[in-house]
Amino acid sequence: MTSNDRPCAVVILAAGQGTRMNSDLPKVLHRIAGAPLVVHAMEAAAALDPSRMIVVTGHGADKVEKAVTAHEEAAVCVRQTEQLGTGHAVLQAAPALDGFDGDVIVLYGDTPFISSDTLATMRAARAAHDIVMLGFEAKTPGRYGRLVMQGRDLSRIVEAKDATPEELAITFCNSGLMAADAATVMRLLAQVGNDNASGEYYLTDVPALARAEGLTATAIACDEAETLGVNSRAELAAAEALFQRRKRADVLAEGVTMTAPDTVFFAYDTWIGRDVVIEPNVVFGPGVTVENDATIRAFSHLEGCHLGARTTVGPYARLRPGAELGNDAKVGNFVEVKSAEIGEGAKVNHLSYIGDAAIGDGSNIGAGTITCNYDGVFKHRTTVGRNAFIGSNTMLVAPVSVGDGAMTGSGSVITSDVPAGDLALARAKQVNKTGLGARLMARLHAMKAEQKQGR
Image (cartoon, rainbow, N blue to C red; front, side, top):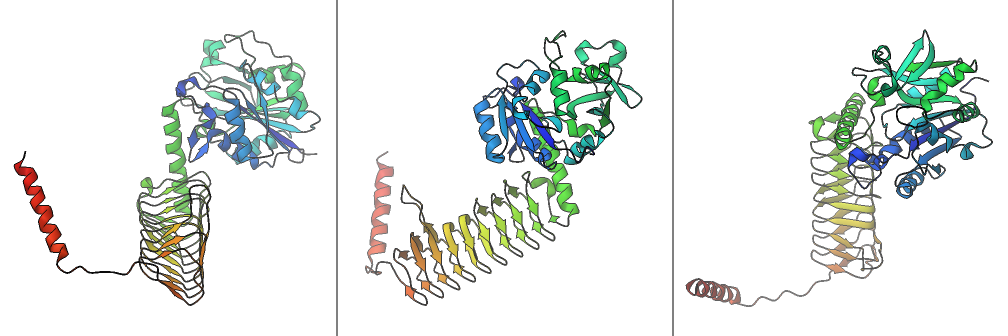
C-alpha cells in the first residue's frame, strides 16, 4: 500500500493565545479574506480528503470549537488545557485517533497559506520515509528552528534558542508541519522530554527519536511564503495583503476584467466566471459565486449570493446572504437584496430593498420599492409573479403576493394579494387647497424673520 492509499488524518494545532495580537479573540479566529485563520488551515487539509480532522483547542476553546464545527461539522475538537508545547498539544489528539491505522499530518491553525499541493507532497514522501517534515529556505532564519540534514536524511531539528553558532548558520528552517504514521508519532511523543530552554515538549524532537530507533526522517521544501505565521496585527494585515495579491492575480489569469484590481477585495471562497467585469471598490464577502459575463459595478458589496450569467449589479448595490440572481437580471444603484430570488431578466434598478422575496422572471421593480418583511418579531415573504410591474415607491407589506402580469400604482401600500393581471392602487386621494401653499410659505418666512429680530 502506498502512502496515498493509506487513510489520512489531520491534526490542526489551534490552542495558542496569541498575546502579540493584544486581543480578547483567540488568535486563530482572526480573519483573512473573511474566514478565521483556522478555517484556512482546514480548507487546505480538506483537499486530502482526510478520514479524521482533529483540531486541538485551548485558549478561548469554546469560541474556537464553535467556529470549527460551523465550518466542518464532522471535525473533532480536543482540548489542551495547559499549553506545554507542540509535542504535548499533538498528544492531546491521541484519544481522537484511537483505532486509526494510517498517516497523520500535523499543521497549525495560524499558518493560513499552506497549499493543498504541499500537503499532498508531504503525504507522498511518506512512501520512502517514516517521518516527513516541511522546511523552507529562510531569507532571515532568525528564531526559526534549523533542519540539520545529512544528504536527504533529516538528522535532527534544533530550536534557535538551543542552537550552536554553527547550527544558527543553517538557512533551511522548520515550518513545524509533519507527516508520519499516526501510531508511530504518538509512541515517539510519549518519549519526548522538556529539558530545553523553554521547558516545553517539542514536536520537533520526534525526528531525532525516530532515527535513534532506526527509522528514517526527511524534510521537503516549500516556498517560504506558504509558511507565513500570523502572530500580530501587523502580520495579520500583511497576510491579508498577500492573500488579496494572489487572488487578484488568479482572477485576472482566469479571464476576469478588473479596471482597478488593487481596490477589489475577495473572500477566501469567491468564485468568478470568465468575462466578468468588476469595477473599482467592490468587496466580496464569503460565499459568492458569479457566473460568466456578469458585470459588477463600482462600490458594491456582495456576500453569500449567486449571480447568474450576464447579470448586472450596482453601482452601490448590496447583495446579502441568500440573494439569488437569475440570468440577465439587473440590480441597480443603492439596491439591497437579502434572502430573495430575482428571476431571469427581472430588474430592480433603483433605491429599493428586496428581502425575503421571490421576484418572477421579467418583472420590473420600480424605484423606491420596499418589501416590508419584518413585523418586529417574525420575517414574512413577498412573492411577485412573472412580468409584473411594481410602481415606484410601492410598499409590499408581507406576507403578500402579486400575480403574473399584475401592476401596482406608484406610492401604493399593498397589504392584500394582487391577482394576475390586476392593477392595485392603495393610496389616499389627492386634494389641492387653492393658494394655501403660498400663504403657508409666507407665514413661515415671517416667523423666521421675527426669530432673527428677537436675537
